[in-house]
Length: 425
Image (cartoon, rainbow, N blue to C red):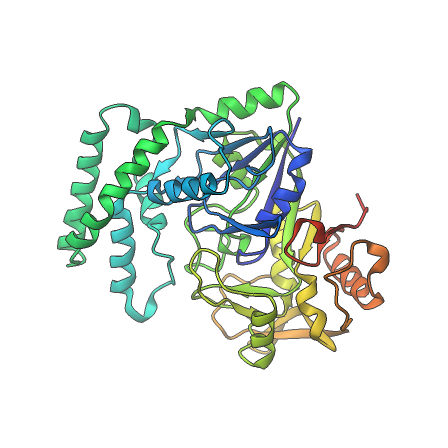
């Protein structure tokens, strides 16, 4: 059996959680392989909205194994809130959730270091979610981190050593007054640690490979998006992990030859949260309409998302990096209102037209657009490809011709039943 990978092709917020939930019945195991609680995977069913930050999006389907892999960083406070919220809604996931002992833990001082670093940057700040994710990955790479497996042995001693070092940095490097904030969250943090101890803490690399050898199927769920990848994204306005398909290998402990289908998810337009370049951004009434119709506010932070037309330069770059075999288009219904829809097919940079994603986006890129007719039809009631207006089919066909990859699913609304399989693969 192979590990199929599902990931975002833009700057995150593509709707990965919904599609994982829709595809989960086909799989035995759903696994998160990177990122932290800055992920906000939203699922809607039975007229209830559920937002997951750390737990895989397959958790609402019965008899499925859900795995938090070694590449994820876990905040015990947020993890406990997530579990408490699920319990209040009648979901007991204790039997179906496995957590890697090698996953790193976000400490209270990591959050403080994140805030201090952003404050010190001033106008050059990157727009961090202030969840402590960057400092946690920095400690991981610097071989200074605490892992989930550490909570079972001499943990208090290890915790004290790590936080003492962080406090010295906060005091001496950043001159940051941390004591009140630290004391306010430490109690909740230790309550989260105690809850973590009650879950199945295992070497998930062995678990997943053993299950594959038994013929079980695995879906790896990415967080954030390709253009936020630490190596290949719009650096330095990126996240701190590898969000691309290769990250599933290192974040779960599976070999490259174990990767099967790669599902690439993109919105029918583009959005971005926080700081950083965005070539097709619409800072006008059209952008406002996209934001309003698409309810484009961060599910984790609540921040309004910046909106713009679909960018095929960036999309083709993401497809190349990930080896995407199937495309999934989200939020087609948000474009219902437009008589004309634009798609960016190139950038003009210093008078030269380029179709390859450049080393650096610095805001000087002028998008080159192709105009396509809009469908001006309510898509939210549609339940089959046969009902698609001709203009929507032309929009999908144009994307397929430009990228060379089939669009196999189109979403026309937030609920499970508003997911149209296009029967191309």
